Image (cartoon, rainbow, N blue to C red; front, side):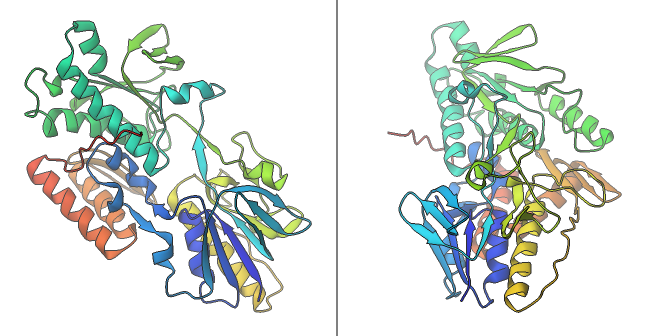
Length: 413
């Protein structure tokens, strides 16, 4: 029985495993976490709207009925092409086919030292860390005796005006103005200053300009200081410098860029400027027909537009499904390989309560209608009936009461 090893249990890795779950292959999923997290809603964990368990699911539970699927909790350290072995921190695993779906991580444009001052948002651990910083800033502000210290504690800077940055800025504004407004006695959380910094000429550059303008207007209506052409040049323990202005802030959140995992180093493969592995039209590694790279780890050109496939969940899921089905077909004897074709199902971004933008083909939605489409789409794509029900109930409860039930500070020991 052929061995198919899948490195990474994100959207792409899970779809590949599902496509192979009924095949004549032994499937081995390797991940350093025992769970899959729904990354599009990590910002809601970071802003206390949802708990970690609401958007995560144990990997083993997903495949408990698939006897040909095995889950290994380990961290990949190297890949040996000649011996067809994946080396991890605990064991070595042989493969006949290999799918690498290790995603992306934060990119600080050559200033990796900024990470300790401005955490990014890619995992549940990141979300918990950011939630602790936000909530602790308000707690410390309640105790502050000095006006300058109070101002710094009540200032929140989000670097990056893409969907993550916009959603984070709107969520923090809603938390400060509604959820926390009656909880403190010495401070007014609604007076918090939320600043969104975008280096480019407009926020949400992947969306049409009309939707970008709407998002900017909606953020400013919520009290967010959304600034464009504001490149961060310094980031330290006291805040940031954007352009020529120093902004003192106790909480800085990074949403400005991502870079691929070290998969190109493991594979000895060519990469693009963002570190993504350059792959063939069938998503295989050039010269290695049994090795596939998918999701944010891969540099894939959309055959329809000539542009790179965006690093979002739909693209990763389509690649995973394609690679899994291709391998299953080859195990059954198929000799020819199709070309991967990406289907763009649209883009969505939530700005805040009753406000979101949606672009699906020619359809463009804003406001409450956009928010409803955004909410339904995210609930639909969550894994597990329980998670869908819990998230829907929490959103309804928050919508009616303005309350957030996951406001826990759980600092690391």
